[in-house]
Amino acid sequence: MGEVKLLATNESFPCARIEWALKIKGVEYEYMKENLLNKSDLLLQSNPVYKKVPVLLHNGLTIAESLVILEYIDETWKQNPLLPQDPYDRANARFWARFIDEKCVIGVWKAGVAQGEGKGEAIQSALESLALLDKQIEGKKYFGGEEIGYLDIVAGWIPYWLNVLEQLGDMELLTPQRFPHLHQWSLNLMQTAPVKDCLPPRDSVVDYFSFGFNYVRSMT
Ligand SMILES: N[C@@H](CCC(=O)N[C@@H](CS)C(=O)NCC(=O)O)C(=O)O
Image 1: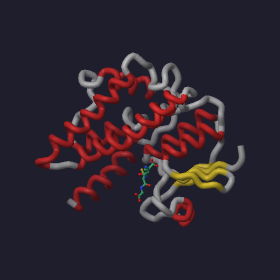
Image 2 (image 1 turned 60 degrees about the vertical axis):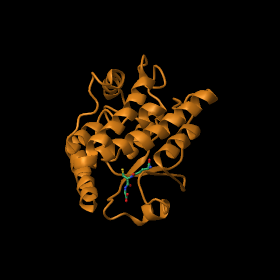
Image 3 (image 1 turned 120 degrees about the vertical axis):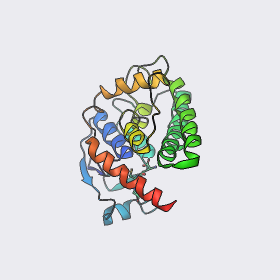
């Protein structure tokens, strides 16, 4: 197994993705908590391009970007596969993972921080992306089928972090009426190990994102 370390912060969902994946694989790791207001030299040296967490350190190798780290973990520790085995299904999973990060995460964030005139339009755009995701999970317990897998991990911010963004952004996006399949999947995921056992305290997530919201709003 070798030496596995994770540079991370508790409140970050890209970091939670990596913790969930390592736990599903049964890989032991050392959690190295980063203060993002005073980043360690190790973080700056390990991820000089983005200077962001999460970073995985495996036997002296550094891997950054949560989607890349998830694939590295899946290829390095073969037990309990995260990605589908079929090439077409794998391609599809990667497509939707990028969609989740590029359209859903960004869309919800923009809708949350928006104030005044552009807010309605930003919310509408986020809802359109979530609607596409809702269709993907229709009729399934998890994105990959019967077991928690890669896309569940990637979308795993929705059942917990989305609600914080809704609260701070004064908006309601994920209702059972609007997105019944995504809503049911969220309930399933919140009852599934390791997600249910590995979540940061809600108050600290609220503080973390309040800081981000205030910062972005003060710049506009
Ligand atoms: N695309 C990256 C996003 C990582 C990211 O945004 N990390 C945040 C914490 S959630 C961070 O390190 N922010 C520090 C900064 O931007 O300086 C991934 O998926 O790993």
